[in-house]
Image 1 (spheres, rainbow, N blue to C red):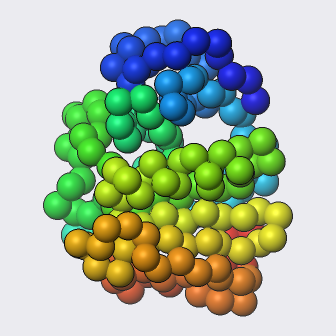
Image 2: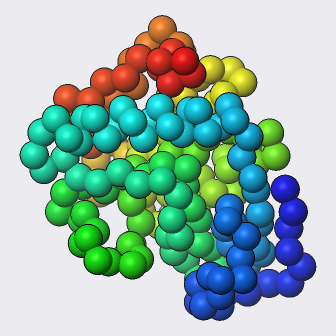
Length: 185
């Protein structure tokens, strides 16, 4: 991981996409570069595949995406490892950028980013109004779930950890169920 020197706004960051390495985010005004390793990519694939299969199995199940620039606030542009939005917020096929924050964000543990993901990014997601966040711990083989108990909740007032022998579900994803252990296979 490398961190660029100097601070910039979200608008400045978005104005220079051709100058950025592939895996970057703007975190508190600083460009952060991270190149994920294979275990991270395997977990990302499993989640994308499982969510994509669930979406394809029924109408109106929204949209799942790999990392893309998502403006969280004036100094933060995050690219969650996986993100999902409800059908009513699904981007149009020719839409270049997503407006707003996703309904679900997924961050996957990388040794160099885990502390920042939990201590810096999670509170920013919460403040921006993200309804639910999954933090997949590739070392412990668990999933930390943070969600709002109701849409009007001020923040993530429900938090729990799922072990490998439990199922990952969400009130946002009706009928979706994924054994946690399958994420790591």
